Image (cartoon, rainbow, N blue to C red; front, side, top):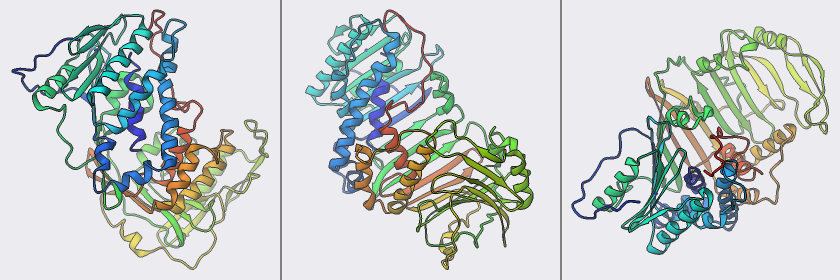
Length: 527
């Protein structure tokens, strides 16, 4: 998500809710603090539009449909800080979305650099440096001060370079500084060394970070340390992520690394591909291996007691019917595995209490198949399959119809790498339509609102679908504690990711979508 990604950051920038004067002479270049837990550099939409590879960006994000979706998303985001902080404010505080909304436009068009520093006082320090002309810099200076003064009931202390506001609760120090063509906005507890370092670097080098040479967006995020600072349990086990995004040859290319907190003992056994079961014509193919240690720790998988656990999986989708998406996993004895799973399931009729508009369903199991009957359009089933490569469990929502088309050998050749963990190929233009149908069915079965055909996000998907082409994603293990990933795609995202993004942007509680940050202590006097 190239434009939406930086947009989301502005919502974070005002959640914590900067001055002192800085000498412009005899400045010394100061390195950024060594305890950074996140760095993000975006070159800005204006700079990207001048790149010869800009069609890879503009096709996705600059159509009339994209502009409508962008406006709707920014409007929602302008209200998000108030919604997050409302319980910590005194009553009768204003939303202030009107003052925040124009700042979001600058995060899309202008170059910016965001850094987050870990601290020992439990309150991470943030600093955002954004390049703005004089008029926009003045707008930021005025609007942010007004918003924070309104919400806290405190006055910002003005100085020749900007302003500073001191609060009572962490983070207690907020600072805004104008430095040349940049403004630096930061907050933290008691002191702001990161903010100071960025300001001094701008005065010394005319910019807060090195100029981008081979990317439009770069990021380095240590999720585990970031999660500890914000009580984000969901991200605690995420590996550190480093990546760069740039347009090349009509595609968006993503190159990066995943660095787990400790070396992973992955068992990369030779690929066992069900070549007779997978057949053309298909629109997507995925192969993944080495996940048995992860599967062993999952609570939902433990009751089925399948031993040994599968360590590979293959997912593919046929072109004829949207519901023909299948998963195959190699097992030692498929018949025994079916019996083990069946023994843990409750067979017979089931009433769907969560969604009374859907019919009840029945689970049947025997030595050859486990099936769920009664759902509209689909019959989910698991069955054993014997292949030259061994036994497999085959799961699908629809029968695997026979076809004369065989699995292309050039696709199988992509798996001929000893360090390959994950490979995904799809015709995104075609797969997008299938995923949209599957997602609508899944949302209906889950009792969740479906994506409306006339919604801004749905119209955006309609517009970009024909220009998406093929998407290829690869992840390889390049060291015991390092994975390298690459993606080449006209839209930068897979069909599944695009549909998930569209549903998220249209969620009634966007940007949360059911995910909640751990609440901070309430402050009746303000944030």
